[in-house]
Image 1 (cartoon, rainbow, N blue to C red):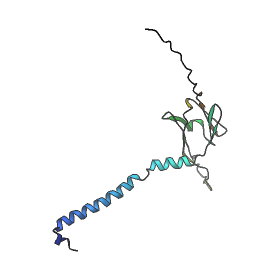
Image 2: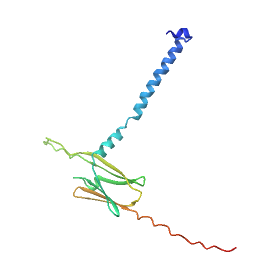
Image 3: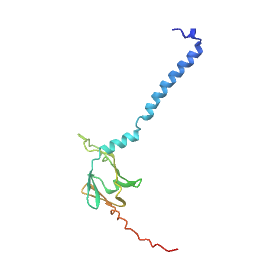
Image 4: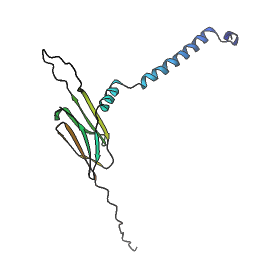
Length: 159
């Protein structure tokens, strides 16, 4: 079919063709905008490589994470947004000594991180962390259950 017969000139067809090409380019740009960032991928790997046990007791929540070979200065425990417990840090590689080469290197090095959304009854002001024998234990106390409101008697005055 010849579009010139329909009254469409070559410049108009050229402009339409460019517009169609532009729409294809923007859709591929949108796909790249939705791709995860490097920091997101790094954080996701760090979270996947940090296993944890979470226990609930009557008065607290307990988070237990293995941290072999780390000092307390290498571990950071924070509460973000009033309800997210963040445990992060970095395991650094030993300095290589002259004349020594690794035959096998299996221990993980690098950053680690875990985020836990705390329940509504978690008291974020009462968080404690202890690292002993390579095991980090973070305790988050629970808030006391709300007391049911007692009915109030209101005196009726005679006007």
